[in-house]
Image (cartoon, rainbow, N blue to C red; front, side, top):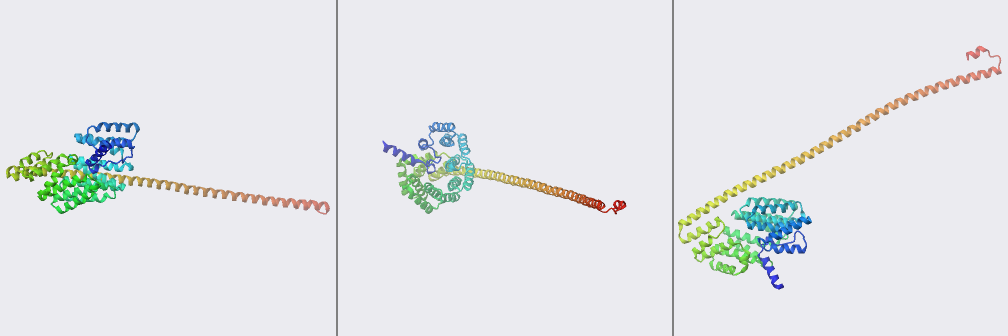
Length: 444
């Protein structure tokens, strides 16, 4: 029984794309994380909504942003699968709000936005994905996060791949690969090598495609899920080279492996079937398989080649014309998206410049206020000093007048005292000398 459970868990891990590796980034309890991880193994299952709601409500009761984020993380992949894109956007927007400014949850944030951007590209909202990727790049730069740079570059590569700009896609995928070791996200490296190989197939540079595919296969021992992706890439490579024996060998190996159906999207399997049936000359069956492809561009692309193989050049020309119309409409859409992105970035730049201007203005206002206050204080000090000096001068004048008055009074007192002493002396002399006349006494 234990062996069966372990095997089931192993298979679930193998079917997960590497970007959905389940890590306890939010540091929740072991019990909560195990329940969450079990649901993330099958992330498109509608039954996940019940678990998502219970986690979110627990987060509300406990006032825990971690539990709320786990609930929303379970919800938005299901909303994508159901086509409820408005609710998908709302769930991701709430995750952004909950994690705003939270440095501890950056890894969870980057992983979530990366997954969200993949869905946006899938439903034709590449411009929104590009804005998200650039916002992620700015945050990664501010926070010096190699993981953020890696995910942002990977999304940019996927967008360029979707727009059939293979060389730009390769440039971004290689940039993302350069961040893997620094970001401790080595599990992403083989997937990026596979993506690079697939772009080289589109450009017809088959040796480079072979080289990158071989580099990715080295990691099969550590990341077994890479085996199916590498084998599919080799199948497309041999199909492009028209090396039919090796292509058929890869195809037979793929369809015999249960992981192939579990791990790949239906469109990828239909496209592989079209290539196989066409290589075998089963053109009617190939046409039927081509009709099962979900996008008009893919259907026209495959069918015009099949009709050409049949010699039905009229239908082939019709399919090729429709393909050109699709490509033209995609080109116009891309141009409009680029203009929208440019306009949004220019608006953001203007807002940033306005914020800088207002900040500088506020700083100048504060500085001016400080200078005014300093000037007022300095003037008050000078005025006080001047007033004090005036008061001191006035006090000195009064003191000098008082001193002069005291000296005059003292002089008068001394003169009076001298006079009195003289008179007393005269009186004493009179008593002893009767010859002194009365007039002398009066004249003394």
